[in-house]
Length: 143
Ligand code: DQA
Image (cartoon, rainbow, N blue to C red):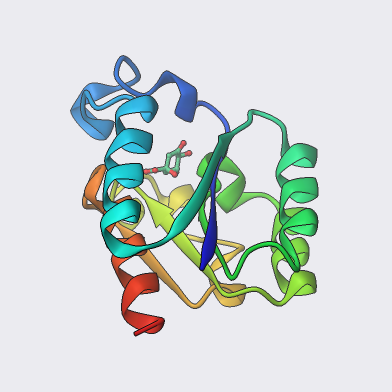
């Protein structure tokens, strides 16, 4: 089974960006932790980050036929992007929405996710572990 992990804008700054909210784990650390767990779970995983909305849309479109699941932290685009929402809906791949922080406990504008209705579920608030929980979900589904 192959999964695509997609990361949106500013997640390349993890480690130094608002550590009181996002922690000090870098995105490279998260990728490393996920790769380790993916090997244990027998999951093939690709991992990418981009600051550009259109690149996320293209990556989602190209995922069809290549991956069985999308694990997506769309970052700020979660709250704004109809294009990403429509792409997820169009490819009909099960997608898991991930956030490091608990978006529901933060500013009001983060409470609403445009992508939540087209995702199978949302994992938020567990820091870097949110990503590992998403991987765990995928592994459980494929048992
Ligand atoms: C985030 C939450 C978003 O509201 C924010 O814009 C991010 C990161 C998270 O992982 O907690 O960039 O997706």
